[in-house]
Length: 171
Image 1 (cartoon, helix red, strand yellow):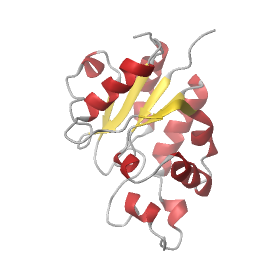
Image 2 (spheres, one colour):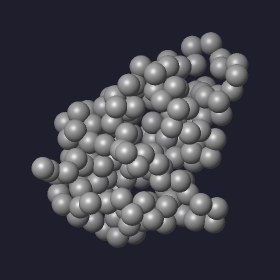
Image 3 (cartoon, rainbow, N blue to C red):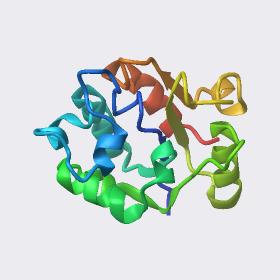
């Protein structure tokens, strides 16, 4: 049996752009979400790219976002249903979260998750230049498994070759 590749997924500035004209994570937990909120939450080019990577590689997703501080699995699944992204719910890894502890870098949180849960699957880390602390020049970056998305740009189709390469090679 082959192991399914893993996508380690941050949200802000990867699939959710926090530009003033957009909505963001705090709107997702608000009781009064703005009109049209659910259609605008996830950046469409980023979601198209992510869905393609999941489908092409039958990948599982591990959530690494700071949203883990205020949402549990039920909350994420509610968001995915509201945004018609059941593919994300259906792709969540059994050990679906890699939360950052206080004072810990994102790289340390991912390393901790990998130490416990990794079974040799290919993986890629999708994060951004701001919250992807410790990832630049890490062992993951040196092995070409990290994409640090630009602020206000997010994940896009130009990242697919890097994602595909990472998800096709064993660590």
